[in-house]
Length: 333
Image 1 (cartoon, rainbow, N blue to C red):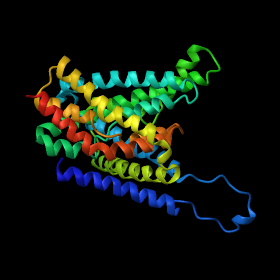
Image 2 (cartoon, rainbow, N blue to C red):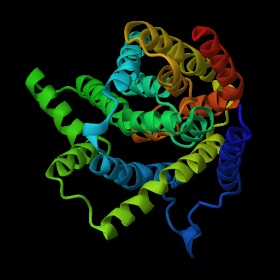
Image 3 (cartoon, rainbow, N blue to C red):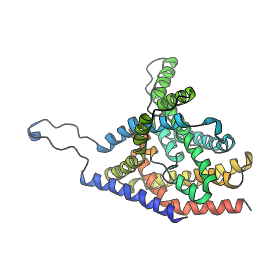
Image 4 (tube, rainbow, N blue to C red):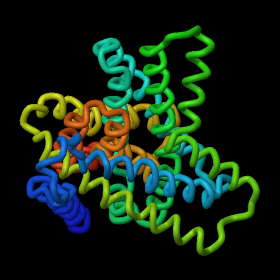
């Protein structure tokens, strides 16, 4: 791996460590009001949940909306995109079914959350410098095209599945009412709605006013640092030792199983070779992205597991990435 990628990994762990320190030291805890000792005890504020809600309802929607508006769909490398997302979505469906059968109705959004954790990679903060360093401008252009649909497809599908499971678990009416509730909650959602509105605005060809574009860019730029700090806050709150087993299993799925499946399908069924094949395989080989934790926080389920998986998979990424680069070199002989 290149020195630039190593620095990116160090920067990620440094930012997470600062979030952990903030959680341990209570820097984000609300100040105690005067006379609080005489007042009834109020429910404690969870800084991690507040920060997660802010990211999920403001920063992430701004990023998704702006991405959809600025995307030039006519110039997309659709064959390469299909070579990645077809196996990724099939893998995602298999992982969801497995976790759904294991977990049942105990945590309605749990299966979808674990599926996102085992599928959604750190495609921006790690993926972009890796593609630029290893594959040059050609590889970077393909990677950016993958990133533009990454959240749209994976997060939107996971959202629909999670809302369907929740509606089914809480069903008090007919099947038609359950379907209506699922559709409504899936569309009026901080992930789905900005994507749909952004695509509709894209079709008008009007673009964005420079002031609006800059405001959205500033909000979207906050997603990565806020999510990394959030991971540190959750580490301070939950720890990692009790969740290492589950994190290791999710990391194996993300770092080894997904890229292996992408390699077989993209290289075999789609006939990708060279740089295009290497880019899609390395896209699948990226460690768990921080949006997995945002997703878990949204549904108040499995936050410790998602946090541990992000940390463990990121820590193992240097070794797994070197493995996949060696496999790609052998495959292309």
